[in-house]
Image 1 (cartoon, each protein chain N blue to C red):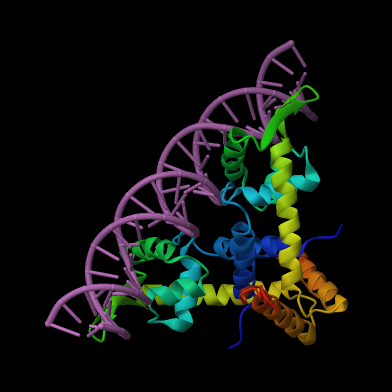
Image 2 (cartoon, rainbow over the protein chains, first blue to last red):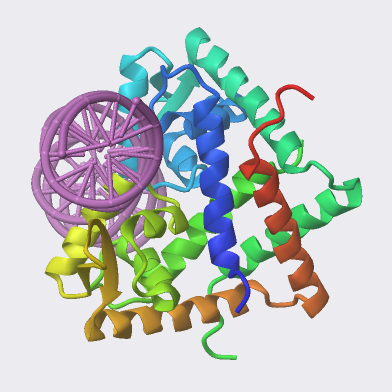
Length: 143
Length: 143
DNA sequence: ATAATATAATTAGACTTCTAATTATGAGAA
DNA sequence: TTCTCATAATTAGAAGTCTAATTATATTAT
């Protein structure tokens, strides 16, 4: 019996996360890096969209953002007279950490791809994207 | 800027986990399935090895196993006059759930691999294995 | 044998994450 | 307008996860 896909995904994802976290200076807590990494390219998203992109539920995000706001990494604002949605923005301090995280992720990916040709890299990304689409699709129960 | 590897891993792994959990009957809590899946083929492992295989720290495992033992899914025993290591065994009830989990994982993997040729499947597994080795290796700091 | 070191598991305490329920707001229909 | 339904965020409470420190046991060296 060979290695299962889900076990490989678990192992690889967990190691990635731990490598990133270990590359930081101890200021951030475990749930924060992924949020900062997302905001780095999506500053101003509303909370609902951040939660979806970071693969966590909204209540989990509420909890993490409260800590981040208290520590001056982000601010939450309403806009357009819409008082239901909250728009989230990086502060200068948050931006600094976000850039650091982005850069560290790049280094870790370089290391992960050591020995890969460009074609292999592309294939892996394509395969994972297809896997992702396959399991995201609502299951066809009747055809 | 294309999708990053770590984001794809996060997304795919999380969806895998949620699909599996959603396929169960609500009896198990979130941390338990991966332990049962491991014990399915490694009954009698000591806790240290289970933690490593399931990519969690020992204290996290202690916490999950306590609940599982209380719910009659596993038992912990000493052996060989060694009172330091604890060997973990599935009960009949635990075995039932473990088999169910194994079978559900297979179905989810089938769905994940929809549209893949055998060669593509093999390549994906190989690539992930290489990624995994690359980021597991101690970093060469001086050569 | 005894002391020093290493190892397996646990405890303690903080943060993350989940689901279910609640609050507040927005949008659409009668 | 006003009622109903939908949506965004939060609260509440339980379980998972982490690191640091502790307990208990085993191994190694003197």
